[in-house]
Amino acid sequence: MSQSTKAKIRLDHSTSMIQGVLIDLEMVADPYIRYFTATYSNYDSSDQLTTISDLPLDKRYLTSLVNRLDFAFCDFDSESLKLDLTFLNSDEICAIKKDLSRFAYQFWKFVSLVDSCSARQRQSNEIDALSENCE
Image 1 (spheres, rainbow, N blue to C red):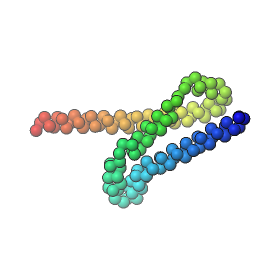
Image 2 (cartoon, rainbow, N blue to C red):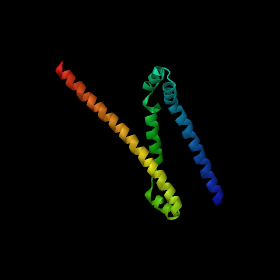
Image 3 (cartoon, rainbow, N blue to C red):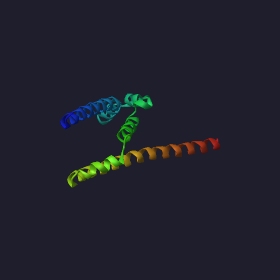
Image 4 (cartoon, rainbow, N blue to C red):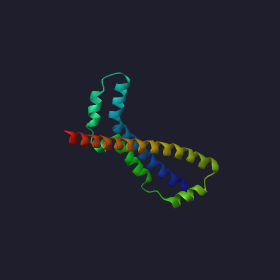
């Protein structure tokens, strides 16, 4: 098999994988898009909120993000990464570093939001427990 054939096979596989991920993301994002559309158009968004609150865990946007991160890092291999880096020029490495910086910021925001929400829930549970003790 020639190099161009191998590359073509990989490209076709990754293209179909990307299309599958995009289709899945559209399906997961749809209730959220409907909610934001209604909210920003000053329409009643209570139906959309009900739809989102009733979503099972596997259909939620949060779960979709976690699954994509799992997929992205499931086969992380630092030795292959080092090998790739030896063949990249400084402009290519710089472009990758720029993307990684953006991803790092997005990941930090993601973790911060989940963490702050769980902290609020813990605080709320503590307040509820204190209130019950006062009754």
